[in-house]
Amino acid sequence: MKLNKEEILKLLQKYRLYIVALAVLLVVIIVLAVSCGSGDTQESISEETSQETEDTAEGEAEEGEAEETEVENVLTLNEHASIITLVKTYMDCIVDGDVDTLALIVDELSDEDRAEIEKNDRAYESYSNLVCYTMNGLEEDGYIAFICYDMKIDGVETLAPGIICLSLLPQDEYGDRLIQYSSVDDDADLQAYVEELEQDEDVQALYADVQARYEEALENDSTLAQFMQSALELASDESEEESAEEGEETADASEETADEAVDTGEATAENRTTRVTDTVNVRSEASTDSSRVAVAYQGESVTVIESYENGWSKIEYNGQTGYVMSEYLE
Image 1 (cartoon, rainbow, N blue to C red):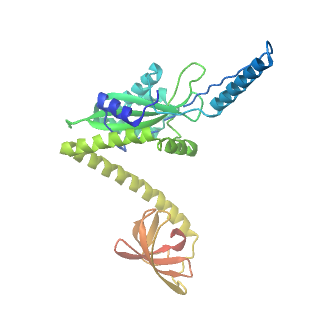
Image 2: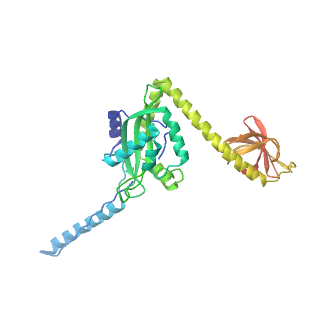
Image 3: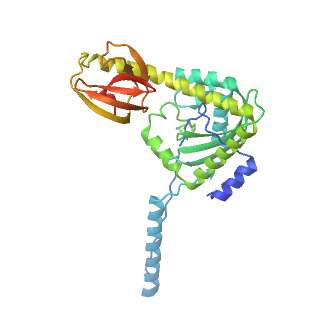
């Protein structure tokens, strides 16, 4: 069943779907199918009839080949009982913090994943209005599922619209299907495939409608808006802390091998704005022995004042002047 933009919007209105980019719930999912046909001829009656039969057979063969090579991949309202059950079980586990059951329906669940899920479930009371759409995945019998729902958050009256994307693996020899969970972030082919699917007109309409409903919910309920803002800030702070710890280790290790002489050599005026290519320490002097005055995170903008022969640069970062190794500047 192919859904055009108008039909999807009608379905969304029917089920009162909502959508939001809930960072603490965002995860990713995937599927596929083929068909073919053929024709035959036989010699009989007259040369004219025989020729018409051959032409018909050739046309059917060409049509069959086209069907084999061109499988239409459309966003479909999924009605497979097994997939609906799998998706509901997944959502139940997320809301209830049931990591033991979740471990049975995903390919792998790390200790870090367990801790994150157990922490997040404290905020969730229940979910409702669950609807699942699917598209073909990378593997035969695999699916990419777009799941829409309304989340009831503890202490908040208004439901929070949500959408997640999950990769559903093909059924095994026993007919069981798992959710790809452990390697989603590292699976470049899967990430690229999902990004391609997200360019589909119907998928974009689905996301746009959910986002609009999410923004409406925030506008109408200040308590929900405050909760979401706090959740996003907390997620951002945790991400920055992890990046800082990893970046400091990388920066310290790299600086150990650098020229630590304070004598910077000849200076070259720069006066340009650029970005750091990795999380890096900003030092008070052009030396690893000097004190750290700040940490510049990957992708942040800095102003390069001067660069030196010894591999260091003088920069301005967040109103402070310091030194970083030039190799970490674009």
